[in-house]
Image 1 (cartoon, rainbow, N blue to C red):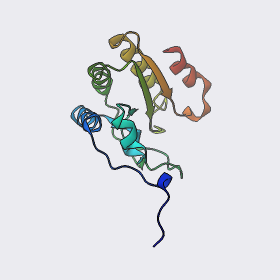
Image 2 (image 1 turned 135 degrees about the vertical axis):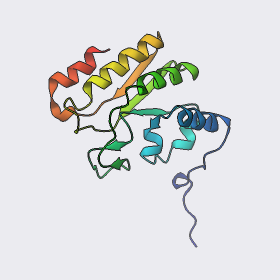
Image 3 (image 1 turned 30 degrees about the vertical axis):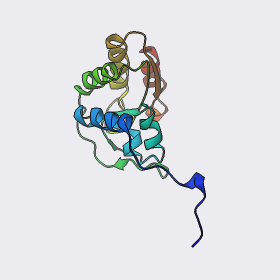
Length: 152
């Protein structure tokens, strides 16, 4: 049997940092693209104390060929997610946070208002934090993209 190259192998999740992040995410009923997208780098990132949070649930309205996120009819928007995410960021003592989301073509504004509120709320609860936001395309509607940009 031929040996697999080292670059093709991934480490199984382990270690205190990994377990701490896994527990915090589960306890606060949050989602990450790391889990939903079945990222092969999950153990490395979580082991280094890094995770990319995914807002607006874990069910996407699109079915992109490159993504492993669940597709279907999403649950209603959970506005309490704002508080849980902001608190989690604070408890993890994050100085920088990456946030992405599923596509929500089922919503009138495709989730733009939720995105804007999430950004404002996180910054209010975590002064000085920097955010990297990987937003959906909002079907190219410039006014919705600007709503998120204007939130900071």
